[in-house]
Amino acid sequence: MSSFNDIFETYNWDDTKASIYAKTSADVERALVASKRTLEDFKALVSPAAAPYLEQMAAISQQLTLKRFGKVIQLYVPLYLSNECNNICTYCGFSYDNKVRRKTLSPMEIMQEVAVIKDMGYDHVLLVTGEANLTVNVDYFKKTLDLIRPHFAHISMEVQPLDLEDYGQLTPYGLNTVLVYQETYHQEDYKKHHPKGKKSNFQYRLETPDRLGQAGIHKMGLGVLIGLEDWRTDCFFTALHLNYLEKQYWQSKYSLSFPRLRPFSGGLEPKVEMSDRELVQLICAYRLFNEEVELSISTRESSNFRNNIIKLGITSISAGSKTNPGGYAVEPEALEQFEISDERSPQEIAKMIRAQGYEPVWKDWDNCLVK
Amino acid sequence: MLTIAGKTFNSRLFTGTGKFSSSALMEEALLASGSELVTVALKRVDVKNNQQDDLLIRLKYPHINLLPNTSGVRNAKEAVFAAQLAREALETNWIKLEIHPDPKYLMPDPIETLKATEELAKMGFVVMPYIHADPVLCKRLEDAGTAVVMPLGSPIGSNKGLKTIDFLEIIISQSNVPVIVDAGIGSPSDAAKAMEIGADAVLVNTAIAVSNDPVKMAVAFQMAVEAGRMAFEAKLALPVVHAIASSPLTSFLDE
Image 1 (cartoon, helix red, strand yellow):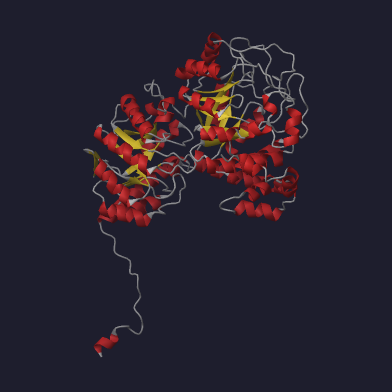
Image 2 (cartoon, rainbow over the protein chains, first blue to last red):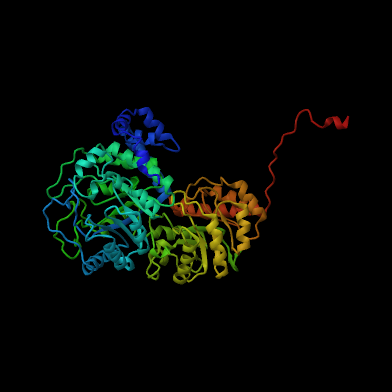
């Protein structure tokens, strides 16, 4: 079976990076007026040469997003089920070598969390865990999905990469969306940041979206952790990956995230800083490159940034998030995966979205639609 | 007047509920449009507590008929299930069949749509399928018991107008059920054009919802649809496609 790896292997990081930095204002101008934008256009739009064109990019991005998605913003919230993890990831609060108390929510605790999340108004939940295959495995996911399915219209999952059969087993339990971020497409750096655990296998992770596509998952989310490597190059590879997946698995929907490395206890300093201006450039570049992809922004970003990004291409946003297992009800003080920046409640965020002239959407899927 | 499954409509402008900046504005625009058939995505509404659903509450007017749609399903089996769910939750046996396995361009699947239409028609549904502008498929759907056909003018949400006009004209010329142009209508002039060529109605959503003034745009569409229909009924003069040559080609016959 072919996979993204076949395409990925034909690219070289340094050459790709050099070609992005070699883009000129003429390349950017061509990309701006193109009716269908190519991967080369995307390179131009994320290149330093595009910086002076940010306002134009934002205007086009806004228009394209309005046409496809309208004046609405989807809301979702993460539910952290466990911080147990056998991986060492240099940038993550749940890393195996981080000496913190580990916790996996029991069924009763999950329901306590669910009650609070439902009270916030949510109908779309994102389940998050570390990677601890003995306790937090397919059986645990099945039990959890069974438990929460009656309470949510849309269930997404951001957990360790699974085998094809495992994904196949979970879809009948109401799993709709799976997010799996590559973290970085820089193979050597990936190894440095993931020295131990199953996650150190770069290729297994790289081919996870292929397995998701083969399993017929409705929606999958891609992204890199911004701060580990040159973001322009990493995001180019994300776009390349998206391009491949859309053609290969044309029945799946796609979403992109662009998390910037945030502080956490004992954490890593970003190797590469990305400014707010650059993040806006990236968001607009993704939209200009792909009119249909969903773009998501989390509470990692500041209130001010999130207020202003609503109109520029974003389609979904989280609010009121806790990044620790039990954070909503069971054990609010436990260790979080990363510090959140925007601490406003979901209702405050909804109010802000309305003030921008957009409608907050709490429900845009129904599990009942899948037989 | 347009009649579908025994129900008559004064307005030939059908509308949708998506993409509006607020449900209050949606309500205002839909009222201004005069539309009597409004499609609602089943996935957007709370089917369990539909009495409290904000979207549905705003559509509770005697002149507005709800048309639940199956947006999000990928095959006939899921569509039939969704239709049953909609019938139970919204108490209507009307269903807008949307089966697009392709979430990027939202292209309708003709094979699954035909299958689902056959089944749903047998079950007593008023089936309104969203399809390509495919004249043969339209005839097959008629045989399957469809209430109308809803061919697209151009890709959904694209605002590109009637790119499929040649096929729409064939469909209209041979259809025994109402033809409703469903997708791609970007401006009132597109809607007027569709009505001029003889479409029975049009369905417009994005162009109204995303405009700077959805209420005004709704009225513009209402007027365009009425004007287009009147022109169709009054029989448009055929455009003269040829000029008269200065040295007539057939004058030798008179010599």
